[in-house]
Image 1 (tube, rainbow, N blue to C red):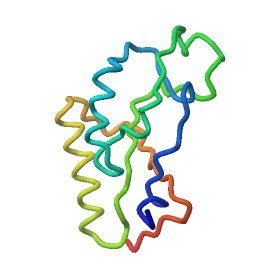
Image 2 (cartoon, rainbow, N blue to C red; image 1 turned 90 degrees about the vertical axis):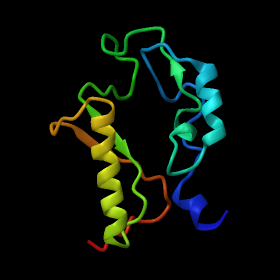
Image 3 (tube, one colour; image 1 turned 60 degrees about the vertical axis):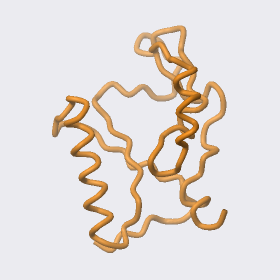
Image 4 (tube, rainbow, N blue to C red; image 1 turned 120 degrees about the vertical axis):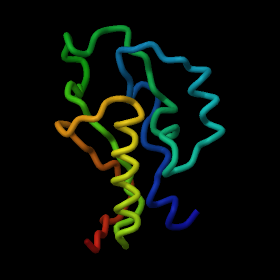
Amino acid sequence: PGDTYRSFREDIFELEEVGGYCKLDRELLRQQGAHKSPLQSWYAELEEYTELDFNPFTTDFCDEVITTPTVFIKLDAGINLYHHYCDFFNLYASQHVNGSFNMDIKIIIWDTSYGMYRDLF
């Protein structure tokens, strides 16, 4: 697997380690596995998603509860400006496509590599 495996790990979560208080179409999620790819898909991270049978906003059961608009983004590479432009464009376009454009959001860079992210800019 080489560097790609180390940069984009797909063994992050086990069953019941990530979930939410919403109804999940498990069959639809499973079908998305056919498109599994480290940068174009979040399938590996959501594969073990668990529906919670309680409201995490009213209990202390969860380690972390995200309550503000938050975007998780996988950065391709910091080695040239083209890759930075693509990351920005994907974020910008995604917000417009799903009707959630807002500049008051949190952005979490999802990096599962074993090494340090290098950014030349």
